[in-house]
Image 1 (tube, chains in turn green, cyan):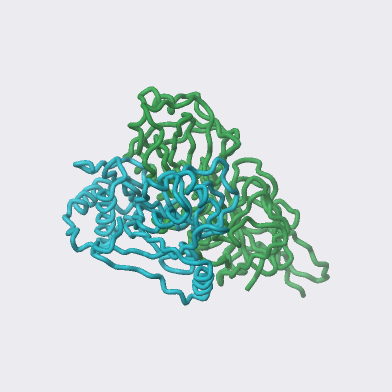
Image 2: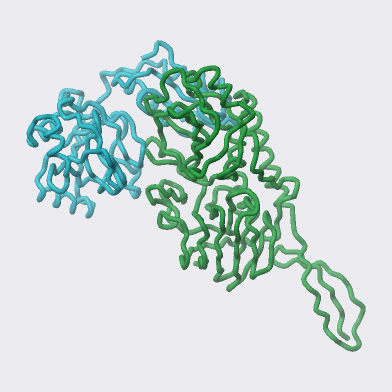
Length: 355
Length: 248
């Protein structure tokens, strides 16, 4: 077993995967990654199954020291990653050896970065998932965020996949202002027509400081209910836009509880959740209404795009141009450039025949 | 119960079947029947079912099942007549030590209702409680059926730490805390049983539709059962009944 030493835990770094599916009926929240897109791409880049657990780093990333050969990729929010002090690219996989140090800084755009390792993070499965659920302190690494001096066990994959990159045309741009598309319901009939129009007003809403993995409280115009703001508790979703009696919406996120007793005016469509997950305090949203048919079409296109990306990444190969150190020989032959593939990585090498 | 099930839109990957707008045993039973039919049919594209008091949320994969097909499938399954007489009920006994350090608010509950502590215990153990749904935290049960003789408001200021297994009252509800959490319920006792055990599959002792029966035990019995639970030797007492054993 190999391990990674957590030299610095960062602000909030947790182990996450697709979350706990099928256990909500027992009251178990789903948890899981906030940004499904960056997460899946991170796994593609290191050749993992797309549901493999990764590290989700929020705001300020961790500093990690590797104790053996492995591969990794960083996607999502740009945290200016460096490898042994040298800046490296986001959305690209790299190979490391013992003693190498990966360091992530503070966000320059977006909010959450994803670090995938070629192989699997060895934390116990809880209800078929490695996701950390912070509120009750279960799952993931000891039910909590990573802290300085933690050791993360990694089962390194047999295949070494590195030098893979995401084509720049697919790299999302994380903005601090954006439209969030929703489908009305399930309780839109608890609101006045004016209330529904308010939700879609172009003035939009601002994410308050009360925004975390459980939900985002928004500030803006208050939305009017016809009468009641409370319902008999029913199921809650990642993306449910609930409006309590004060009229200010709260968007429920990955760590939401399974059920809630507030009216839910609308639901954010799944393709817009990754972008929303990359927005935090102070970001501004304008809600936009789409029909269910449109939402399904967008979802199908989203999955289609991810398949394309998977293929593009598999076919990509960064050619690493190593610094050339010329040896001094007498009686040496002409220089030839050669492509050499070692462990799947393509190297351009100057070759000279020594006489 | 509505004459016709309402289908409520819940984004592009879920739909809510709403059966009524009240907390009732009939609606809850209807939901359990639909859950059972849908689970047994193993419909391709249905990812997860989340039953609550009076509705059922269905999570689905729109790439595997068309929305219209999903609705007609659900409509068909919920129209199936289920023979209720065949439905047996499960009553699960929860040994509980009342009062003292385990139930520090039991005196308040007694005073608030102008009865004695013994009467509180007698009333609380005298009814079987239907598990309407689970939620809030892993293994937390929403129970129905508590006597109005022991209704007590929540604490004005919630406690920051409540031990797992605590049994409490909040307004007209009673319930148990499956894990250590903050909370504002009036605590009347504690059970040594584990409501949520991640090492088990399923990880919970109860499901919606089961009944909870509290049985008063002494502190010594509580400690003994707790030990057995930790060693894995305790056998939970369950009564499978056609209804005759139910205390209502």
